[in-house]
Length: 414
Image 1: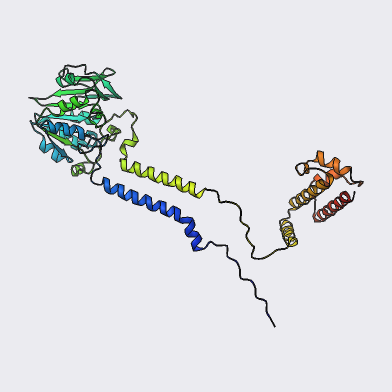
Image 2: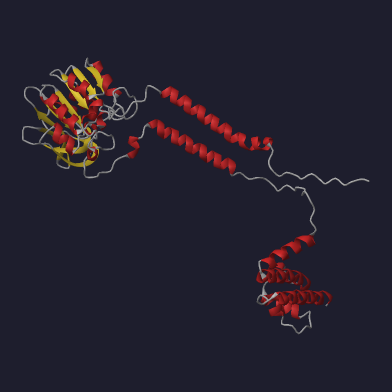
């Protein structure tokens, strides 16, 4: 006796080959992105410096100013700790402090003691209210103003020789009449020179923009930078850092209300700052790459899937079984309203075709009912039969189905 072999079930899960074909594009794109990122990081490693760094050739760096000073015979030394900066202070040295607001109160007091005891020059870049009160006692700050080309409007030789320069930012009010005030913005100077004993002095600058590579060749910026920083044979370029061990001698926190967009100074009045200036350029470039990769991946995944493909079903199901299964679901859910609407909609579609009504108007009572009435003699209310409410019970639902079949037969034979 021969036994029938049951057909093996057909799996609809994708094969490994199909998974690879779908994912290989994205994997290749991710691999290219990783290789590009590693290459970019390797090329830039060891040469990525911060803002106002004399070793940085970026737009916000100050390498151009440092090179011009070296060409004039000025020795330029970079200091990254407070001990290095205070040790180098002397009568033949200019100490440039690029970020006085990053120093803790204790560091600021130590720096003031070291610079006030020497007869050299100290240049402070945009100190805020707290930093200015400790590093140059008596000086008051005024609200921030935009950086713009300003005339010197003072008798300071370096400023008069340089002429118009990109100044502004934080403004300062001198404690006495002996101070020299230059480059006023809205009535208050953005460059202030305080004389000490002997030839020593302290210079407060409201903005570091004229020292940056991108602006050094504009206005009289280069001349002003060379004369302010090149008045002594030695220049110590102090770049304060939060990693300085001396910052742990007190609470270790800089004056946050003084920090501006460059970490170099601002005011406590809440002026706007450029958040992007605080983000290293490498992170911005990496974020741009990741965004582009995400957009390309979304476009790739969102492409059209092409025309439908007919797939042979594992088993064949008779239409009557599908109808019986759906009817069973309706009955289990007690969905007489849904079942009645399905019966009426199907009947209206078939009857409309027999009555000469278009499929679009088959479910419009004002069009369908007159056409059906002209072909029947039944006394039933056609409106209730074809568009009426849901049956109250299962018996009424069965009766509705029978009446719809009878109406369809009548229209067909008329």
